[in-house]
Length: 402
Image (cartoon, rainbow, N blue to C red):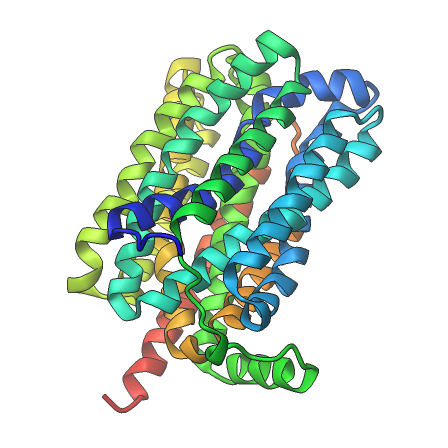
């Protein structure tokens, strides 16, 4: 029997499971020009699909991992998903065409869904309410260190081994995570609390979620928040490279922005008990509407290159900061009424939000035309829609009995 983990070690392990996603995406950013030049020289913009294909696979895998973990336990599903992730990373390393690499990335995303979704279900197994939101926020704060250093690590690996070496680092990262979990984390879902993997039970769980107005709205808003984040991630490297001629310094600026934005999760953890999850999400999205509107107005002005770069870096920080102030809270809002079907709930929430967010981000990314206009207009539309939905959620909650 593994030793029972302290809360601090548990948060660190969960943060590392979450960080598998960030590491798998952000460390690829410096490699996109090299991969595009080597595997898609006629249209280097297609290299962006390396990011969205991974996200698409993650969304597909998310549909299955939660119900499977409800039926068979949390740890076995993480083991199987991590094995698929490792095999797909090896296939991506050996890819000789962009199409083969994209297929491998889809399967890598499917495998990565296991630690991402099941980690959230494990948190719900052990915590609830605002305390759950606090745990998620602290884990997200630690997890933000990975985006801060991942592009620099990716650039370093590329310098030493070429872009294929990044996939070897994915394998090592995943192995460390599953060995740590296997040795230290007891299975959190006892056999008597497992739900058989039967279609009627799955349909009933989905019905419970989609008929609950707060859960339904939180999934929609989470989709929009992820859409903003994925759109920024998809286009940020071309913006630095093409618009600001800063490809060489991009990993350092990205790390700086991620560190600054990482304070959002720390701030959220300090405020969420007092202010509540819905209020913080609403304020964060309202602020994003104002900030992005200002960026669009400034972009129309004839700013100097230095000032234009400063405006973009500030806005990038604001988008990442918004994600830190919203994602943990939205997950907690949606999961709170669904504790009895935590695995299924985590799957449905993660799958729908991720798949549709990728579907939003991919076409916007392909619209890159040497300006930030498609990016800014897309993020403004999503933040405004999310703000409106959160105001509607507030009206619904006010009508509910205390």
